[in-house]
Image 1 (cartoon, rainbow, N blue to C red):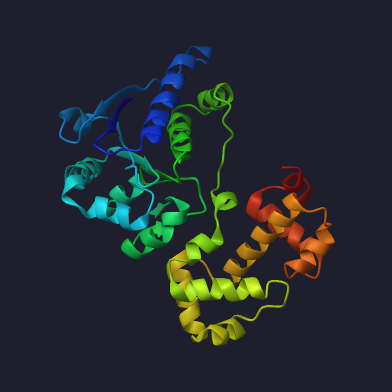
Image 2 (cartoon, rainbow, N blue to C red):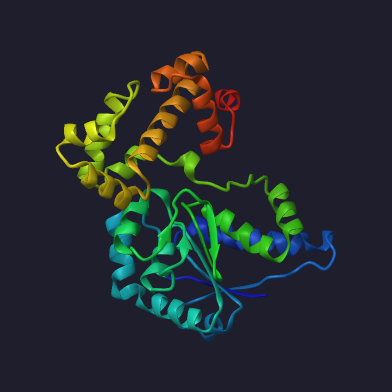
Length: 303
């Protein structure tokens, strides 16, 4: 497979090298499996013809971490050649991939409209606001939809590169992961900080503060909305627009976050922790922990 990795001034260095190193390892280890795929990787600028004829276009992420800076970059003249290349490459049906803030370049080029995608979890409120036609799920680490692969935050570039290898050979991807001592991380949810997402909207931030003050109590969304001075419908819309979920789900996220903290930092029993985060029965908390983190309470305590 001919792979063109698009580079430009100000790329995220570690993300770029993660892509190159994983694909290089895949080529080096290919002899250990029958009929291995290979990846001929070339770093190119957006104007080079090789970028337009490759089988796979990987768009490097810019080295920016704050939403305003990301949006300024992807909307600006400096990134226009990259956006034009992305759009033209998509028109030819070429597979395209990007991670972290690079997903904004794909969305700005218009190729993610109507598709499922993921992005850096803490940038997801800005992503949703800027690209409402993209079906974004910031909880996923990697999403492939109709020939476009997107991955999550920063070192999600490793997961992106492994996904590229896995598309060619699952066995080789497993081998590369073992040699590089990389655990697969199907979800960003375990790393997400709900309050960081909430700060993107004043209504959601006020809701976040109110819930934390009443975390051990039964929570009514109507009471919460009244307490922060908005209608329940406004609260529902604000949470959905900012975080992409319902207020009830957000409350559960805050409770899970607090429970995980107490498991790591105290010797409290799961029963006591359950009551402190608003669940009468420990079984409810155990089920939610497994659903959201993929781990049991005892494993989370051990970690």
